[in-house]
Length: 241
Ligand SMILES: C[S@@+](CC[C@H](N)C(=O)[O-])C[C@H]1O[C@@H](n2cnc3c(N)ncnc32)[C@H](O)[C@@H]1O
Image 1 (cartoon, rainbow, N blue to C red):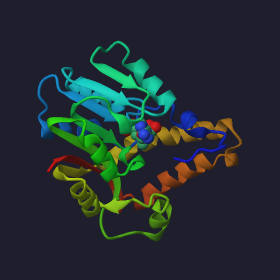
Image 2 (image 1 turned 90 degrees about the horizontal axis):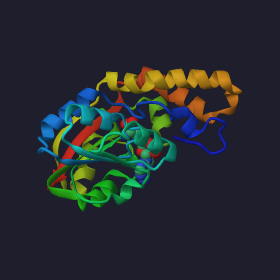
Image 3 (image 1 turned 45 degrees about the vertical axis):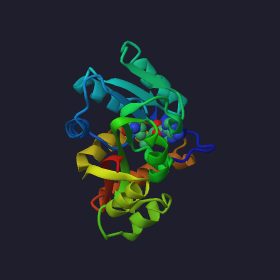
């Protein structure tokens, strides 16, 4: 996500959107099934955006106590407003590298790359309750094929690795993989369809060529349509080794 002096900016591009990264409600069902959280367990959503996954966790397990951390002020306020009537959900406009308290599950969708896998796991290890787990989704190559166009685009994200590479980071941080899976194409469509509509709306509102951000998002979506079978988001459930 780039910003700078762009006439659109991150807030205007993503504000009011439900989902700020690929994902589905089915992923949350899978996480709940794999982690067997006890009644009343505490979950942190690190980099919760506008709170789409918090909504799903709460709908599927109303007994859970959920704390969202979000650095972007607008997204944090949107999430806080959405859950203002829910006593078991708290949203903090706060850096996720400083989670407060202990959690049975620390969840982070599409946000770990801001810290790096090893740094995130090292930081959050101290916030895990006994038996606790961390779940994160991370962009990765799905196999050896690296189409030059995709490799050029994702060169802006030098930490991008493959599933084995993510496994090495997990082990280096002193964790073991409990379960992993690759998000389905539907997870991308759920994210990209409303985003593409927002881009089209904003293009009608500004002088289109003045926004590098809109061009970047258009290029990202077009790239996924051409080469989305070679990269994807992997969802990893990990626990201290
Ligand atoms: C790709 S978005 C995903 C948001 C949300 N998890 C979702 O799936 O819709 C990543 C989010 O992480 C947030 N973020 C980045 N660095 C952060 C930090 N240090 N602390 C808290 N949030 C952060 C960004 O503002 C952004 O909302």
